[in-house]
View 1 (cartoon, rainbow, N blue to C red):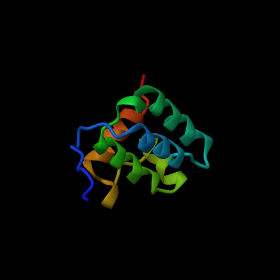
View 2: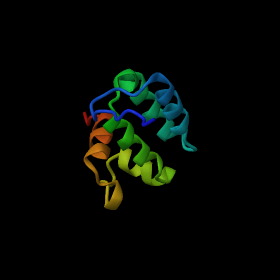
View 3: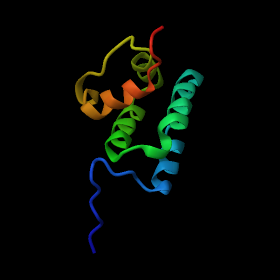
View 4: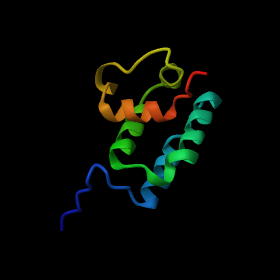
Length: 96
């Protein structure tokens, strides 16, 4: 039996989102603040592409992630994907 393929715009099931939220727990409080706010605003309507972008960000070290969230740096290499760019734009705080 094959598993169904998800359209990139489909929302993952709630169990996947719960595991993702647990996976996003970080060592730096600053990162957790960004991530918690992101899940409060967007967690119930994430697409599979956004989940993929978030997982790519979670593979980074805490300091590299914070640099991206604060726009000190932009994604490079394997992390420079459209999915990551979309998630970062949703996570970053607009400049006043």
